[in-house]
Length: 134
Image 1 (cartoon, rainbow, N blue to C red):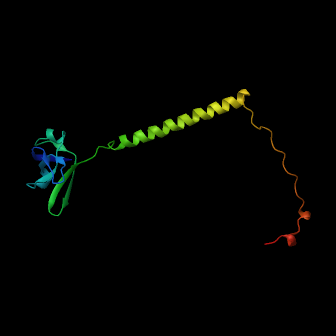
Image 2: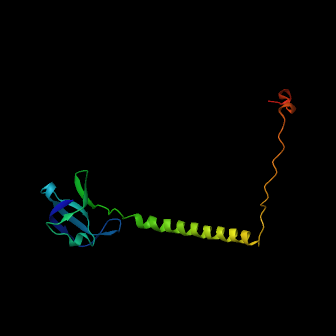
Image 3: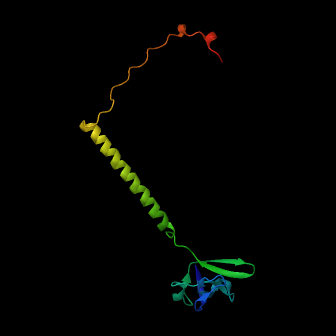
């Protein structure tokens, strides 16, 4: 957590690649008078000096930037949908299996329930090891 000492959000701009963004400049207590830049959004629009915010600060080629730290459950939503789809598929499969099992127990469909007769044991004396090709 970083304590903000300065917050400035500029009006929305368009990058050279045509993407819209909102520049946000901040200063934090731990970095003194250093400007830290990042992208603004609805949350950063509410930030003011004195607030403590959860951010990650990075330095690259002389620039100091920030990103908002991701919430612990953020990113789970996209996985939750895929997991839910898989669970529903498994539940459908289980229902299908139950229907098949019910049909077999109702006598509508018969399966071979007889135990197979085991093969007669082979005497060791009948096997001649010299006749086996390796």
